[in-house]
Amino acid sequence: MDKKNCAQKIIGEPIYFNLNTERTFNEAKVTLTYRDSGQNNIMEMGLQADKQKNYWLKSLENKIIDKLNWNKIEDNGVTLLQRKPKFTGVAEFLKNVNNLKREEILTYQYDLPVLKYIQGYKTETGLLRHSVPRNDIPPLRGAYQFYTYIKNEPLNFNFTFSDLNINQDADNIKITVYHDNAPVAEKELTDARGGEERREKISAGELNFNLSNLPEGFYKIAVSADDDVITEKIDSSQQIISFINRIWLADPAFSFPPLTKGRIKEGLTLYADAPEVTISTLNAASLQTVLVNEQELKLAETYRQFSLPTRQAKSKIYLEKSDVIISGAGVFSFSDGSLYNPNYKKMTKVSDVDAEKINYVITAYPPAQTTGEWKTKTVSFDLTKAFRYENNYSFMISVPGLIADDQVEDYVEIKNIKVELSGKTLWQKLKN
View 1: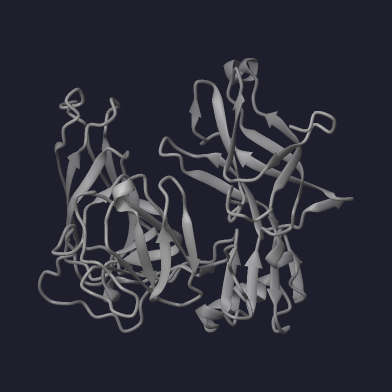
View 2 (view 1 turned 120 degrees about the vertical axis):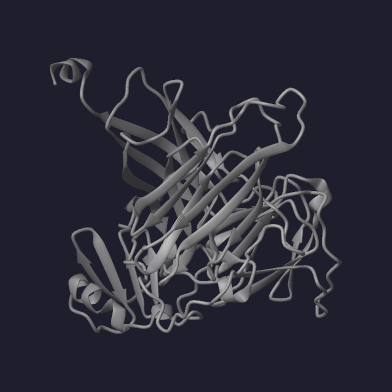
């Protein structure tokens, strides 16, 4: 802490802080005053959304967008950047977005309508089994979500779970099926509270979905569970099963034949469309060299993330050992034919608009205000649906690529954090 200037220099992300309030509020306006070394492209702030420690992120700064000398159109908080002027307004772009190539569009802090249908999709006959584990795929640990697709067929899934009983909390499991962002089905397994004291793995039951007469299109299935829960197996008749952003390949006892660069043996193969692949582990026995498109990504330490840019439309990831967490801004699958992402590509800290042949960027990100070397940015959060624990709201500052002890002299220095709260008083609530 710089006591003279009251500024805190941060050399590793993420940074967390809590806001303790005696009562609930509806909105928080958070104003951050900071400066940085300039090496990191993206800086964001988040509010904890749920018990699983998911955060709603909002942008503080995006140097990739700030440096783009493209045609710029702003309309009602949305900015469209065009390599060459084609559309006269954001509304015109949105009206014609389906006529453009998806690979030439990049989004940041803005969601374009997802793809509704797969042209030429044909329903396979018979039961296709996407089983975890199969002969080569380990179980999954904790929470995850994935896309699937149906056409003139039932949505058919059977999940089998176990409980590690490591923590003492109730390890409840909930699965929700979404279509067009609306829930269409939901089921729960309540923890029977057995085995916690023995810390022994036990069966946690099954959840089954067999939904008929559903409209064609993409469906998202979200599995809500804590890290004690293992998905031992997923049986399904669906062709597409694409995991969104993150998966934890569980079971440290499971390993694959060794891999060597240039000679891929029969290990675990994952397919991904993420522009950057990040891998980490909590287990020293799972340290290894991962191959991403035959480029080496060394997982050299526990409790630390290691990343490798791919900048490819589709990548192959090869692993020797399980019990690793793989993440990236995209989807992952265990077979080539299962990989399909209905979303447009999202900008990340490694995005290269020239190399990726991007012609359009659409975003709700406004540039930071600069006063000398210090920058000031205000972001607003809806607190009505935020996670609140022991009178605390939890916030996070994320600077992807800001890593302590990586031999890079980068930093973010925070001068001031101001939070303005608004909401109904106790008297107003009683009056209503």
